[in-house]
Length: 213
Image 1 (cartoon, rainbow, N blue to C red):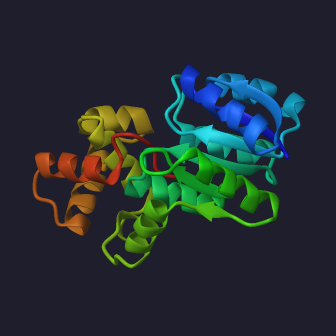
Image 2: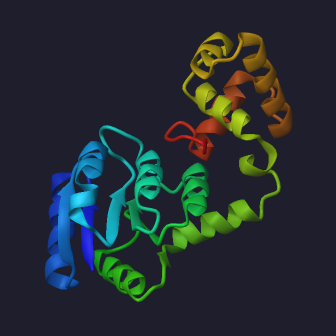
């Protein structure tokens, strides 16, 4: 299996490269540190699977995931990240990738198990990811069940401390429409102030990523 590694930390790139080549018998298709490098090398790499970090210096790894899928719909993707907030889990779940490894709690040996499972046509998701996914799916008040895509986008803007006028400019809508979306999402989420919105948004992961378009 040809593996393309996408990781911004030099030490982690070296660990992954050595593990894939020496320990797990994978063929290295390339090593990238940024999203731009990944997209530039994607076609030439002819990779079967991408090991994808979500924290990249030039882009949100979840946005890159969507771009990779748009370029090569059948590409297998294994995400490696310490980020397992509800928004990330929701977007990863929707992307139908091959697996997720939690950097904070799992070992390099488990990476080998994940690669073997994927090579055999299966998937591998860490216990942390599976627990958060189950919690979200079973929560009738989860943001993806109560907010529209536009309201999720407004929530992202609010997490970035934008006011109604700034949100309107960013989204190409009037400040009044932005205000209406803000009131609607506050009502749906039972939030009563901007500080409550900020706490909720950050707890759900909106300060670190983007809702689906």
